[in-house]
Length: 292
Image: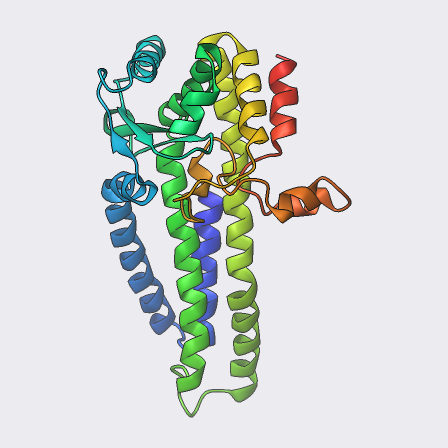
């Protein structure tokens, strides 16, 4: 995360130079960027969970509404030593689930009706343990910050490209050769930085999925439960209806189903294509869980 933050700041500084700012001007541009990013991070910190729940179409449930799901969440929360998160259900035949919230006291777990109908108790326990591990490991907070940083890089790049129509902020007396060099470097950064930021985001997401699998297996002491659940989740190839690119990383499995990229990733060049996935290959996750 430190490296990612430094990467974003370097991109912002390069773009400020490309726009023609120098010395104090470049630092002022960077300062304004830091203030804006801090405000966006502050808003995301407090309201991201509500936005995610609203976007997913999840509805809150009490113990009387979904006793089996509620009991599993309650028991595993006690075993994991964290407060009971709010429980939601999404009316969707796809098998999936996610967790959200800035910390243990402001967390929520959501599961689709398809997941509840297709899994037995031990498999459902494995999935819920995975999601509670995301909460305890602060993955939900981490990924919110990551998504914001990726978005800021995209905004910076778009701002720089649009500003070129207006000539940036160059002084007429500026060295033209030096300005041209900064312009080229900034243009390359504006094109490549959003791609690099997305790759960093995907890499962090995949690592946290592996960690949540391991933490969930440690919590239930039964890794086969989660492995079996992942097999059933992978068998349903249709996407979650209300899933979006902004929330895909939150789900236990790729919410877009078996995409063309997923199919190609199993063939030649699979390692390269997997760089663009928010989740590690489900077969690899199952293999690791089975070996525990």
